[in-house]
Image 1: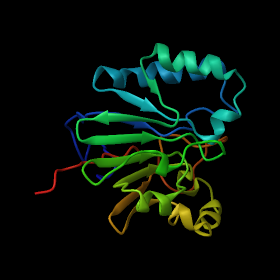
Image 2: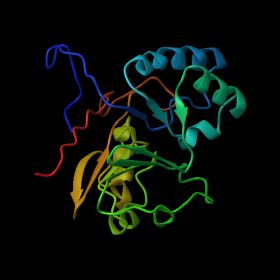
Image 3: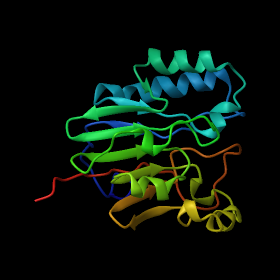
Image 4: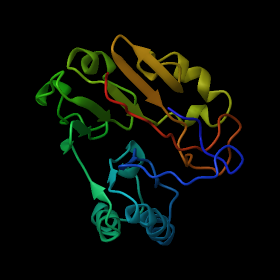
Length: 206
């Protein structure tokens, strides 16, 4: 994973094969108008590469309806995935429902083998032990916002699946990345962490 891009660190634009949006882009404090502005801006990414979106836990608490949210996302050509998989050449992308949905599929419900590179996009950094057992090569999550405000980060350290709240962690043959995300929750304040996007480079085995 490369560090977040800044104009000083990297002047060239990124040209990814796809974008992954890991949820919690709107919450109970987001107005309908701000939601529309947000996804209109994110639609610019679709001019470069496909954009895939999964819901976070805070999209369950919005002021507007889920149908209104779905419509705004889809009219901006962003692909919503709920417990679905996408085959991208030799990459299989598994996009999970949020962990608050107790009826969501398990990793074992997908036919993942060692012949493909398998990515799980899961808003909350949960289910890592099962992912390791079921041939997942890379788990991408967010949710923690790297603590966002002191002392929240300390409570995240007490939850083993959160892998210390933030960062890249190799576990056996699986890589787990938890980003601090582009946005926060509730109040427009961050005393810990930064807003970021992560660039992940996947190279074939020699």
